Structures are given as structure tokens and as C-alpha cells.
Length: 92
Image 1 (tube, rainbow, N blue to C red):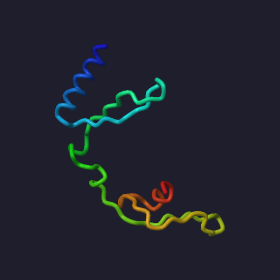
Image 2: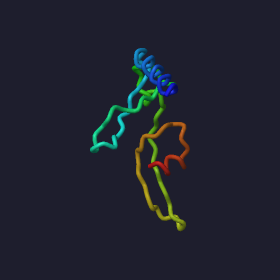
Image 3: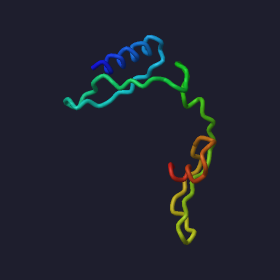
Image 4: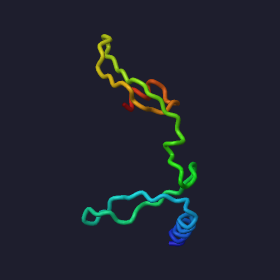
């Protein structure tokens, strides 16, 4: 109980400072949305879109079978510049 109150106090302070984000979550009651889960900002200041902080580039994803035939290909996929080609192929 005391932990819940401390957490609620921290959440209220973050909300007042504008440093928290609310993520909607499904409720177990009649399929509706009940409140949301609060996630404190840690790496991006309020008002900044986290995706704007990532460098992006266009790549092609290509997966080949054992005999070299192309099994899957998708061109001009935008992925973070820091990703390896293997990461690009797996996610795409």
C-alpha cells in the first residue's frame, strides 16, 4: 500500500512537470479502455518525437533460399541507420 502511494506521488509529480506519457491499455471489464499505464520519460524531453531522434535510411531487404533463389524481397524500406542488414531482413 505504501509503495502504491509513493508511486502515485511520483506519477503525479511527473504529470505536473509534463514528463510522463500515458499508454492506453485494455481493461478486463467489458472490453473497454480503463485509464492507462503511465510511463516516465527517460531519454527524450517533453515535446520531442522520439522517432525524430533516429537517423533513418532506405534499404532493401532480401532473403535467399539455400539454392540462392530469392524467397523474399522488399525495396526502399526505411530503417534506423545503425541496424545491420541482418536486422533489416529479420524485421522487414
